[in-house]
Every structure is written in C-alpha cells, then in structure tokens.
Image (cartoon, rainbow over all chains, first blue to last red; front, side):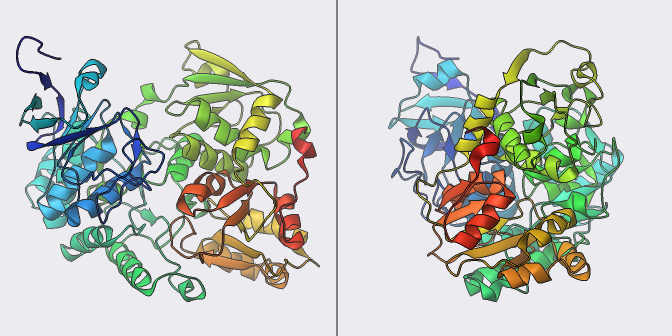
Length: 143
Length: 421
C-alpha cells in the first residue's frame, strides 16, 4: 500500500516488530546469506549479486527473499553477535529464516531487528540509497 | 500473540519448566505468530540439525541452553556436527574450530540428544512410524521422513528444531497437516529406459530435476518401473532438497501416501502435468557437473551418509584396485555404520584401495579439506550441488563405477552411454 498524496509511506506486514532508521540497500535479486554475507564484516560478498561489495551492516536491506535456508539464520546471528547485522530487513515474502534469526538474536543478545514483508507494488517503490525509517507496527517512511 | 496455548505451553512460557524451556517455547510461539498459526501441537520425536558449527554464536546458543538445564522431552537424534571428533587431526581443520565444534557437540549431548551424528538418521534404529508427528531439521532427512516413511514434519531451521525437542511442541502448520500433503505437480516418466532406472545414478539426477522444476512443491512422479531402495530414495531426497526446497514427494506405487495417482493428489486433478524425457534427464545430469576438464583431486561418496548396503556394493568393486596417488578417496558415514561395516569386513577393501573414512560430519559441514583440492568427483547430487559454492572447487557428477574408475586413473573418466550420449 502506497500513499501517493502524502510523503511516500508504505505499510508493511510485521514479521518481527521493531524500529530502525537507516539507508536502504535494495536489490530485486534474492540473496543467499551463506556465501553472500560476510558474518564478520557485514559486507555483501556474493560476487554475482548486484549489491556485491555493499556494506550490509547497519542498513535496511530490501531483497525479495533469501536463498540458502537454515544457514541464513546462523549467519545472521553470527553477524548480530559481531554487530554487523542489517538494522532491518524488508522482503516480499515472509521468510522464516530471517524471522527466526531476529527472534534468536533477541533471546541471545537482546538485539532483534525488524523484519517486514511488503507487496510487490510497494517493493517496487523502494529506492536503493534512500533513507528510511521503519516504525513499530510496520509503517515505512522515507526521509 | 494470537496462537492458542495449552496450560503446559503457558507453564513453559512462564518458566515453570526451567529457563531453557521458557526460551525454547518463547521462540516457538513467536515463530507461530510469524506464520499466523493459531494452534500448537505435540511431536513425539525429533532430529536436530543444530549441532552444525557456524561460528561462536551457534556454540553460545547451544551452551546457553545447556547451562540453563535444557533436556529434550522426546527421542532426539543428532545430525552431523562441525567436526569428526576423533579424526579431525588427519585433515586441515583449524584447531580452534575443532575445539569449538566439539564444545557445541557436547552441549547437545548434555541435553539428552542421541549422539548419532548423521545426516541419515533413517539408517539408525530411531525411525519414526508412519503418520508420526515429528520435528526434523536437515533438508534430506525432512524429505525422507515425510516421503519414504510417511512421518510428518515441517522444514525446521537450525536452532528451532532443538526448541521443538525441548518442549515436544511445534506450531501446527505445513506438512504436519493432511491437507498440505497432496501433490502439486505431476511428473510422468516418458520413455525412460528401465535399464537406466535400474542404475543407482538415475535417482540423484531425478531428485535434482524435481527440485529445479518444482522447488517449493510436492512433486508426484509416476512411471517408475524399477524397485526403489531406501538408498535410491535417499539420493532423490538429497538432490531435490538441494536444488529446491522439497520436503515431500510422492512416487506412485513406491511411497506410502501414493498407492495411486489419485491418492497422491488427494483425489484432485493435478494442477500441472509435465513429462520427463531423456532430454530432461540428460540436462539435469549435465547440470550437476561444473568441471570443464578431466583434472581430479578427490572423490567423495556419502552425502547423505553412506549406508551399510552401499558399503556392501562398494567393497567388491574396489577389490584388487588402488587409487591414483594424486586422488584422495573419501567416504563419509556415521560412526555406527563404520562400526558395522568393519565387523562385516567391508572396510578392508576400502583401506587397501587407499580410501579414507570420515564420520560425524562431512566436508560440507566441516572445514576439513586442504586448499589444494580444487577438482572433486562424486555420485551424490548433494555433494555436486554444494561443492562449487561451499568448497570452491569444480565438480563432476558420475556413477559409482565412474567415481572408482576415475580415482584409479587419476583423472575424470565417465562412461556416459547409460545417459544415451
């Protein structure tokens, strides 16, 4: 859902609630965290991915979904522990592995991050490099 | 929170069953909310993939649960770990990784899990019954339990499977529920020679094909005329759960929920019907190979872990032969299978051949291979799928005969006539 009359804002579906303000790094390509995200530095290291070389730490990462199943969870938790995880994640599909990572990060390190899913129309409106705020309840505003 | 909780669930959440039980139930209930599931349900068995060591955080997670007194409430087999506990020094495992991975193993054993250390838990005596509700991690095991044994499990990620084992509860969703177990796509074998179906190498290729064509679905395959052994099913599972996320398939006439096409589709018409031709099989076969020349450093067998039956097949094929000096020959299996194979005299031919065995883990789960290994051959679709990315090596897929011939020759040699080339 995109409100065109006002400042751009998107209402996402809350997968994991929370807030974050950061730069959006967006790609239409799904990302495999295994082999794609450096759990020590937070850099995106999948050399075939459009975001290759981008620092994923601290950003709001917008990708359609993840590839690589259960390792996604473990790698993200390692990244949370090393303080190089994304500040928030926006996807188009509800991704159990991202959700579990945020929940376990909360239980283990008191450091969950918001995870939202949005419909394809809304996803298409998100611009790489823009600055955005994820609000509790799933609203995304752009700064 | 929208999920309905039983009194026992609430007791866990309130910490009355201990702090580990609170944490495990909290994770499960929050995941139920993510899926918008309104009910929890019982499980009576688990297979836990969480021992795989990914770094300090996975070790801390295990040790945190253990230190809070976590105990599993149902029989829980353990998947591979990050290290061959007693054999790692023969390989290139960094000592700190070996030490941490072993700590993680101990933590899961301390919770009462069974130290099976295998990705093929269906080879142990701890097999679920038909219809039994269980929680399993490890993609090939999930697929085997659902498809071949008719047990019922969703795809449980690492770190969540142990929560289910500790509480004996899971969100009621997905493949636990009858309505989600019907087929999605009908694949009909079309003029696939029975002679090819009689070759074990057909099954990993079939699995790879299913995963590529119906990655999130429940594929239904009809037209298989050969007998499908558990090892053949294992090979389908490993292929289909690597190239795709398949957690259940039906082979009409061969798997317990598919005595007929109608049963496999719960009396609905298939949404999609796709013939599988020899061209499709050849394409899937070629897709499993990235090697562009005949260089060979290593042959790996046993993903999922090698079975006793496979050792019985392998042993006579190795007699009187010796691997080439330049080729490492490795079989991965569980401790229990190695012990039984030894008692049956099946390991001497392997030793005489110059082959080695790794237990507890495999090169995909343990950083054990030296850097010089950059060209690998295998008869496993799972090893073939993950080798280029995970091991940074070129891979060639072949039959078991091809793998042995190549290990002897010191270069990749494949008889591709069975594929109709």
